[in-house]
Length: 452
Image (tube, rainbow, N blue to C red; front, side, top):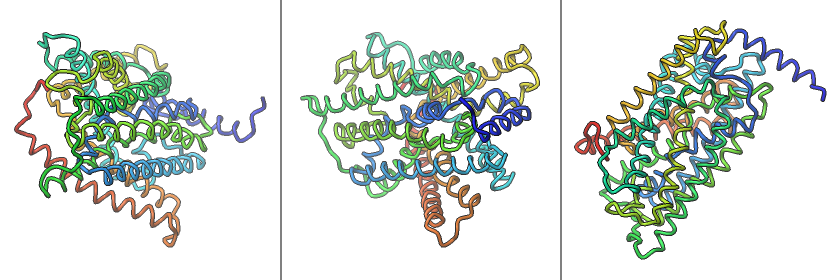
């Protein structure tokens, strides 16, 4: 089959660019994937076990406001991620392909934005997500242990450490592109545990052990207001990504149109899982929905579902959260590779393999230690959303598009982007305040290495 001249030129340009890449981009962000691989990466980075907290978000907002916020966030993030892909494609066509979020900020807004704003926020978001995933993996292991054993002598931090050992192995996977098969399995797993959770909620909601269904938002006026902003932060975190440019970097040239196809694959899964879990969980448990809806499946340590269903659901969750953690470790891996590897030497030489093994393992050990020390997933989730996801996923894409393409100030797209960025800037500030307030209120429950 004959390749068109345009495609030939794209591949030549890609080869020339690879010769100039640093070790982080050359070894970790390999540009060899298809749009389908892109869809797998996007799905794993967005459709994660954080979606099990959506019934809690609805309980803080109520039916109408909760579902409206869930729908609006889906539309806005799909739109904003598409804007980011258009900006990335535009710069790629100009011969300046941007492989990292901070590179986009540096090229479009200036070096100060990339170095001092976008870079630290993205790194904090991704590494915070890794910590949260390791914690959730440990909680899933403990959940399985409690269901399987009557002894219950082991502590949560021990399960977190066990999950950290699994991550020590997975983190050595060399590149983002190498995760494509793992992320396909991850896509199947998130559909599986979402289906189990939805079916479990419906079963419990119809059973004789069903809790009383109260759908009014609990608390005083002040608590409701701050709770609603906290819920928005949780929803933003659930839809958040923060690594769109890095995922786009895995696509082989030519890149035009491939991200949009990948987003369509991803959001087909998003709509299926997010809305089914949120609606069924809130319907079954009302304002008693907990930080993760799976906790509602146990009452005083006794399961409301057949034990094998709970075990299967948690195994699916455990396996998928490991894939999510590996995906969000890629920006850290890329930074470490750029700093300590030599791009002029073969990737798997002793010179490059040794620092990769040491420093990637060290990053997992640090994340595992923090997760074991501060096991408060719900509060952490809201803080990550307010400080990381809202700026990177709801605000900056609009700004990048307007600065890059300079639409007329009389156009609908200019004012639409400006309005979205302004609204979510305000929501981000309010969400940050409410999430920090929640941590302060819960501080008396906190203790290092708590067994929760």
